[in-house]
Length: 495
Image (cartoon, rainbow, N blue to C red; front, side):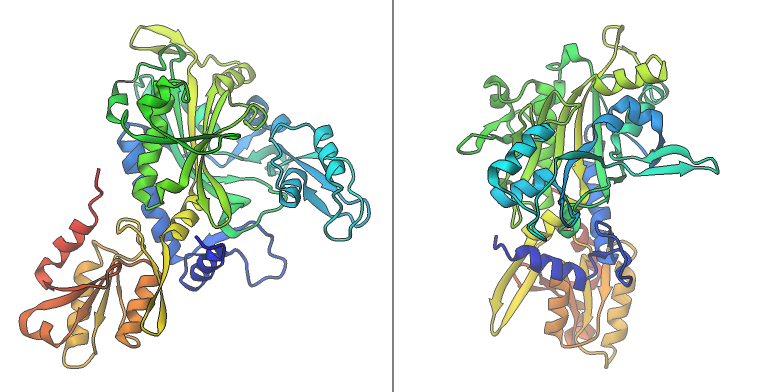
């Protein structure tokens, strides 16, 4: 991938309605807030439906939809009020504020672990002689900034917070969901929704946001039965690409081999890493440019005992798409202690009471969508022009098919509109009669439409149309009565 691909995808996204800055008509619009346009919403919804199909429904998980504003007590229990911080450093001359760990990494290429102390970060700044990038002034000592957005509820301004991660609603709802839905361990509870983090330096559009979408799965399990996974046989042959900092290369092993070699701790973790791999293969991301990077103790989040980041290589570097954390009983124990409620459940398999442990798949939807766009973006020379095309999977393409009359006279326009009307309720179809047929093909290719239907004079004679395939540019004649079946076949997702 060319390092310029980020800029090309960004340009395409703005011009074709995938996403754009929030409040962009105002000069005081804050950074870190982006909005999805019509094509972006369509693609996002299809990505979410693929996630539900390949993870939630496949594994028999339950989905909830929790509140975005939560009480202060939730974040006392979760540890976010005390631990959800980023290191910042302020210039003593001009007052500019930087996120210290990112600042050091950008200037020196030296990775700064998440749990590194303020004193150690100060030492790194001194070691490398780093100065303010704006005025070359001296940098002060590192301090901590809590990234949660505080809100005041009601006229008294009762203290509450926008959730920094969707999982806390799952944890506080766990007991009720388990009882009312007659849950059995292991139990996956999933949620799609927005989270909010007051990032110090949001940047690169969808890659670092203050308001963003997450698709989170929390698997509640009996810690004594982490290798009791009957469905593991379904994925034991799935290849996991594993990496640890200091390794010279990625180790590719089946899920079964990864457990045997001790690279993955148990069948439960291996099972869900394999499901995640299979899901991203179906999104069109080049899985050979992915890895599960096992985090060191210094890098892990404060609640994690074992952590893997699912990362994908992009033109901006390795990008984390999913945090895979074994959170043990950290969350339920914290909420039980703070709320004074008992959160143990009875494991029906042995009728023993247990405080479940949790394995988490915390997916960034926005980052995933960007990565799919970049991995799907191609340019090639066709005669004297550059053809830009998004080779999206048909089931993720915001537009499945364009309906194009070769011309609007002689009844072609009316026929094309009828075909579009017949298709549009079941498929995302787009009608376009403006410009040359070549230009209309290009517009469809740039939003990833896999097919273009051209209504031409022959259509009026034998009721067939030309179906043009996006990737190969090959064409075939299809009877209009067979178009719906043709489109349905294209949407099949192969196992």
